[in-house]
Amino acid sequence: MKPIKIITFILFLASFISIVCGLTLDLEYSEKLIGFGVLGLFFIVFPLFSYYRWKDKDIKEYMLTKENLDKMRKNQRDLKK
Image (tube, rainbow, N blue to C red; front, side, top):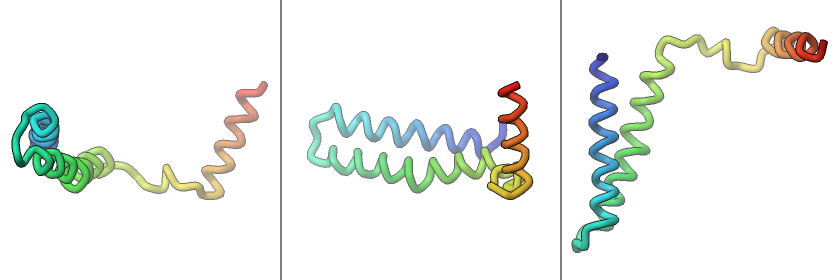
């Protein structure tokens, strides 16, 4: 397995456990546990996951250029036949 995938998974588990502990345990700092879990998910885990999934992709395949629009229209015409 790739190191970034392992790190992302570990940080996801830590954030998720922090949120669950904050919701279930009756502690004076349970709201902070929930907050740090959410911050960890949105500012650390999600960007790492996005980088890992998109690093080898060509961005031009996903942009709405004239060529891609023409391909989509051609595919739609072919499906209607």
